[in-house]
Image (cartoon, rainbow, N blue to C red; front, side, top):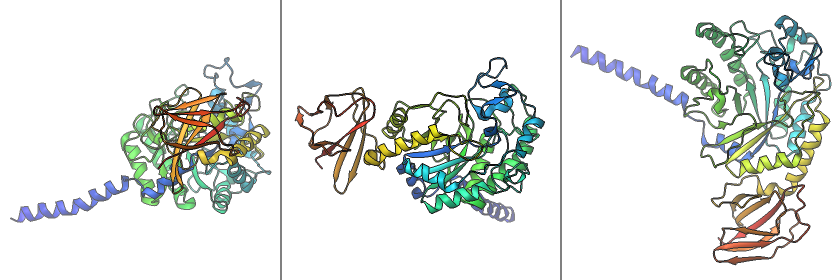
Length: 443
């Protein structure tokens, strides 16, 4: 009897702990995720010491096939791609002085572009922190600038109603003696990596949550073997859940095996699913080839091309996180600013068909992207035309009106044999920008 009582006591004591572990892994409140599903469009920022080099070092510019791993445009990877000794690379900390940085200008540029959230590389693979970290002295306070950048950005985001989050490289860290390295540079044993994990990665993530209260954390792994085991993944999730009831976690916390307790899926770089995905998701995307500013990367996408990616993602239940690589002085490249403003102008006129919309369970004809919305005023379908179309045919019934969204110009239409035919006059679609047809359906 005595043994039974002792055993029962142990079971009862263990149950709350087990329940707590499960609770720590649970998803945030549903309203914490709703803003993300409604937002659709966000700004990504890649900024660090690598921004000083602008994609070139010692007479070499990425991509550079003279280096074994030099065939990459990614300027943020310049240190291992061009084999820069770390002692040399670390000296950049004495030159990073973004005197023209203005957090409010950045946030307003994002807001005016139609973006609803803001994510910055608080620490990329180089290991350099953009905030005043008590965990590592490889941070912004050791530069001539000596001011916490994240504090300024958080203040600006709150002022202008912008959700905000931080990219944190939890796996690769080229500064810490035991942080993971690119596979061609070297490898760490699991025991070595655990030292980095406990000494720098987890403590800095805790700093970001406790000090800045982010709406999301953006972790980074990809389709390569790494040290983020399911056990470490869940340890990190528990840490986030412990200190924040609202902070969202992306699927690249463990690309191969994100598990069931992340909040949204993160696609590979510039990767666009062809089908509707059930779980919330987003695509991280570049304006040029590189993420960080690359002065000799002239491959800038057009605003119309990027808007097409945006509405295509929205039509499949996803978001679009579009990157800007600021210059080292703290300013946006004029090429990026122009595109942001073009996209913002288009969204000013056509955002009704983007924000708060849902995918449509109707196959769209070639050159057409569909979204839908149901409000107190009725049910609506929005058809985004990516090419000139005169007669738009959709498998819809019960249309009550059709018009050009931007101008309100009424369009002739017919409900015929269970299908909708909309006639679009010449000149309404020029092929250089997305035109949107707004269709009201019977309730």
